[in-house]
Length: 217
Image (cartoon, rainbow, N blue to C red):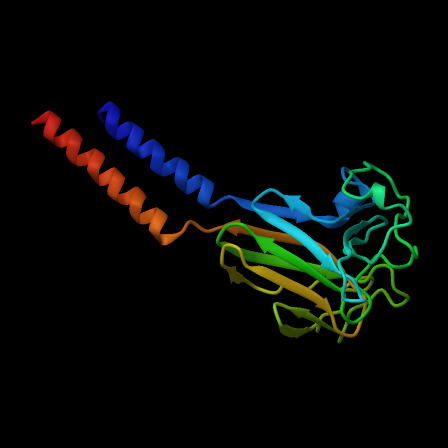
């Protein structure tokens, strides 16, 4: 295999590896660890994911990482707004005002997940670990305008794996309260290369191959 073909093959393999890379976030672990209890006007994460929130009053809220085996919720206001958009590794200090307002627990509260790239969401899980019954069993949640019901009871929590969504670049997926408070626990997704990008890459590689063949002749 000549040098040019090796470069072309390496490009294909590298591109495939990038396009197939999965991003996985455990918001419970983040809140209990490297991020700590924290509030974000926009929580920017790798993979082109940005998370914002709407409060129960309909205004801008905070995407809130709540510690204590909880996860990602919504906070309407902070007792000190200057504490926003900062990591507090290992901290369990509540920043919300009132302190109980740190999950998605009122009609109108919504998490907005915006994706920079074409994305396939592989898995989302939720929990209700700070409520009295620790259960989402038979309750509902709104995901992307669709009302989902939790039908599995796993004791102290209920995780819902919603299958798979295809989300176009620049699209926002809304996750909203319906009838029971909840936290977003975990999320796994991967970026999908655009067909036009794949086509251009293919044409480029064909051009490289043709050029190499002519040079050899």
